[in-house]
Image (cartoon, rainbow, N blue to C red; front, side, top):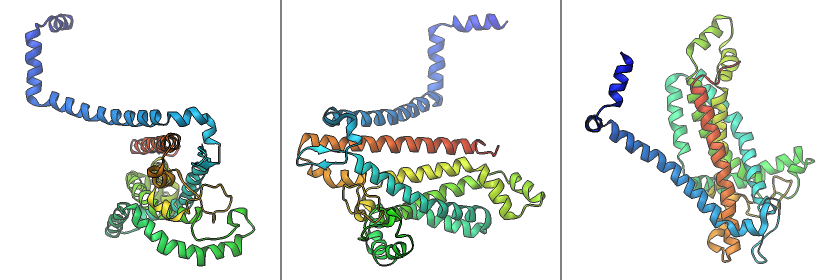
Length: 328
């Protein structure tokens, strides 16, 4: 019976197939499928074209310096000597500093808003946090110039020197601008992302998990820290990766407070430079082809770093939504 039906469907005349297709077309299914497919493919095409353009435009730099481009510390446009290491170093240092500050603050705030605060208070504060995430980076840069830099020069820097001055990372002169200052500004910028995403992930934890822990005699904090947070650990890591990707690619705020000096220094008080900052500052001034190609290669490196981190963060968040964050 099934064999006969299958044979009949395969032997259906082309006219019936066309009428069936037109019927689906009139219902809108095929149109919606084609339109959404085009939009989805367009994202891949745009991304591929962007990577291709960066790759082709950085040909001179890649041919001239090769892998040494990543290990050279000299950046001298006058003599056409370019190395990316100071900028990679500055990007990683400022991003790590921002995460060291923002992760504990953001996670603690997310736990309070999701588990301990009254629902109305939590929703109100979450709305304000979402607004902070939408503030333009140049505003944070102004905040850094007029608030963080003076505090670093007069309060934070001297206090760190008085207590931890023997450590190399807190040695040297304190100008107010530098790695630590830009890391603090970045932390202020990315903490809303950590709070917002982590709060939403914590709210997705099944209520049964909390009630089971409480029924076994756990306190509310023990249930939160030992059950809810481990369950949502993958999503929380996703929020941290998203914050890191934002910190890696930040331009204006960092440019305004880091000092813009292409040097590698062990001291966090020293001025530095980042990939995004050097591209923003020098791209319009790049007169030689090799100079321009080197800046484009820096952009390619930064793009690949942020792309990989964002992709990993999305996968972690999806895994948590499907129960991938369950404690083993």
